Image 1 (cartoon, one colour):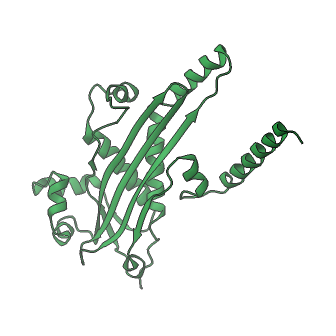
Image 2: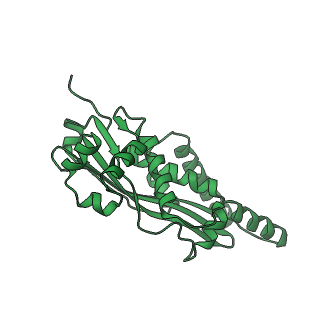
Length: 245
C-alpha cells in the first residue's frame, strides 16, 4: 500500500469516526467537539446541594458584556455591517443572550420568572447595573424578585474572525447560580462555542467560490445559532431538579 493510499485510508477512518459521533444526539460537548472547536477545556462546578435540594424558582438577572458588542479582529464596524445595526449596543447583545439562555432553561421544570418582570422589579428599586446587583446580598435579591435562586451571566465572547478562506464564529458565556436562601454558589459554568469554516482553493474558480462561502458563513443568523448553542450546552450541565414530595 502506497503512502497516498495510507493517507486516504486514515482520512476515511477519521471521517467515519466523526460521522459516527455526530449521529448520536448530544447536549454537551464531546472530545471531538472540543478538538474541532480548538477549545480544549471548559469550566463547570456543581454544588451537591443543587441535586439534593434544588431551588424551585429561578430568575435570570441582567447579563453583563465583558467585551462590548462584537469583537471582530479589533473592529466593531464589521459586526455592525453583518448584524445590520447602525450602532453597537452592549445592552442589545446581553439582552439577546439572556433571552436565549432563559428560553433553554425554561425547558427544565423550574418555576421561571420572566426577564421582563425581573427588570421591572429591579428598575423600581433603582438597580440598573450588573455591578450593583453583584454587590447585594443574594437574600435581598431573592426577596425582591421572589426566587429561590438567581443566575448572574457575562458574555465573554462574541467574535467574528475572518482570514480569507478561514472564518470563525465564537459565542461564550460565564454563568453562576446563587441560592437566595443560603447565599451559596450552586452552579458555575464557563465555556465558548466556536464554529469554524475552512475552504481549500486549488485554482482561481475554487478560490472565488471559497471566498464567497467563507464570507457567507459570517451571516448574523449563524451567530444567533452559536449563541443558542452555548446556552443549550450550559443548561445541559444543570442536573434536572427532583424535589421531595
